[in-house]
Image (cartoon, rainbow, N blue to C red; front, side):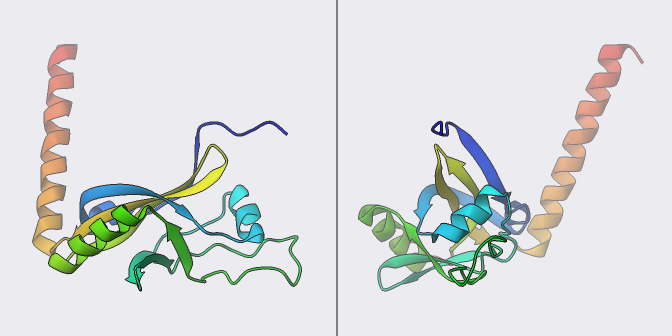
Length: 157
């Protein structure tokens, strides 16, 4: 079997960028069982309610749904079990310090295969207030209108 190359996205958390202001991103490995990897190869996962926590100096990914592998037997995994994230010690210590200082959280943005290994893009984020969300929507709408008007002028309308 040929070795996989490149990045193949499994799942994304689309609401994360709407609900949080992304301050920094990290790429983390994830400790998985064999049936979880087989299920992910089928492109099945959900990061909708997922978040990461720090427990005893380790970072854990919680509430990620990876469905049971269809051809699995009694060795199948629990779909919403906690999964350990694999980061360097200095990255973990850095994240712990930032989370402890401010009201920041760790949110997974996407899960993907990178050269055959499952990785998670983890974001250090701050929650948005309702007025921040409205401001972002208004800014995007204004930008869309500007681009539409520029397109009309280029076409001579």
